[in-house]
Amino acid sequence: MNDIIRLKNMVFYGFHGVEAYEKEWGGRFEVDVDLVCDLKEAIETDKLTDTINYEAIYHLIYQLVTTKKYYLIEALAGQICKSVKERYPKIKQVTTRVRKPNVPIKGVLDTVEVEITR
Image 1 (cartoon, one colour):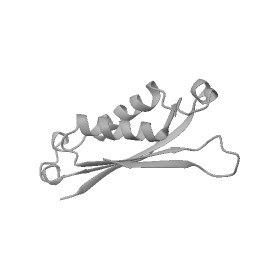
Image 2: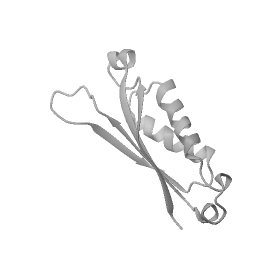
Image 3: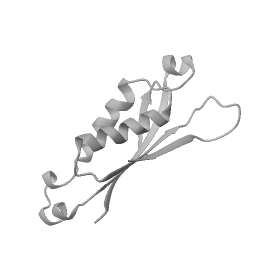
Image 4: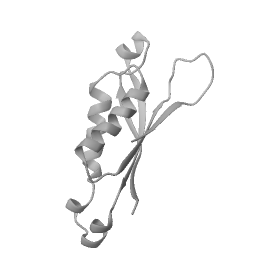
């Protein structure tokens, strides 16, 4: 069974990017995660201990985005997937999307997004 818990459009302030000023000044980053797991037991028992505590997932992602500096949002998204899977073995698959709204590109666009699935 492939049930999904989604955390959508979490917004954090981080210091990721290739340019020196991105690591110094920081910027806004948006994150989505899809957690594929079996929620049958939680449906039957209605107990938090039988599901994935998405508040704990949120705080894990907050720590990853705000405390370390990555050059690439690819690396950040990959680390989120890895950390979530390591700490929550009930999760079969994690898809992480990291968006960087204010990219230093000579052009007009809303955001750049990377999606990693593990």
